[in-house]
Image 1 (cartoon, rainbow, N blue to C red):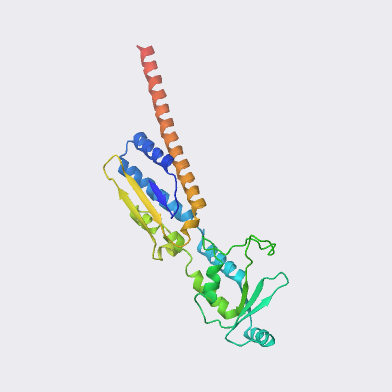
Image 2 (image 1 turned 120 degrees about the horizontal axis):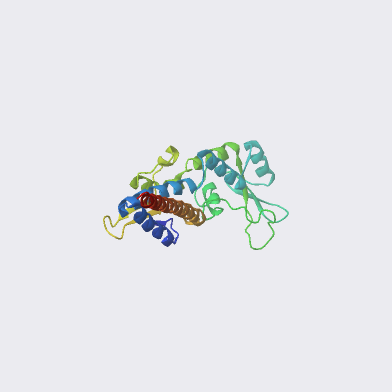
Length: 265
């Protein structure tokens, strides 16, 4: 089995555990790999952020509010007039620490110079707005966040549009969920997935499941995927120990029966 979220993962221990389970259970390799791939895919969906739809929506709103402030249109227009600006230009105001406080009146503009571009410039590889350097915006290694001020309804509509994307990162595992007959929440299933799943080497000694998640933000999921690997490996090893413990008990029981039989004779 291998997993790829546009990052490299070492699954050698997992592969050894799969072979051990096949030997211990007497099941063929195809069945074991299919079963464990289903469990892996379901765990990957659970561990990929966010945990719930509500949590994801709250995170989106918090992130956007870090870089977009809201104000009434009247207040924004007064601020622009006070600084001698016009409706169609950005107004850059400076804080004492030198960071920019920008009033964006042209709130219909999107793309590289508008709200969308402003948001994208502040997102990290996981798609989150970084909080690095917030306590001290004067330190050299962090870029200070510039906060734009837009009308309340503009910010609310932008937040709503981005909240519609919640679940897309999880949905990158949907091809794997479907291929290995797993389950996922409805709010994840509704998205068009960017990923793939393969089952290779059926009925051979080299059976493999390959799962990929190519959704935006997948490159930042290395920590979560390592958690999934640890969880599944731990579960498989527990299963192996239980099976082996059962064998040991059966062996001991048979030895006692045989000993009693000899004594009886």
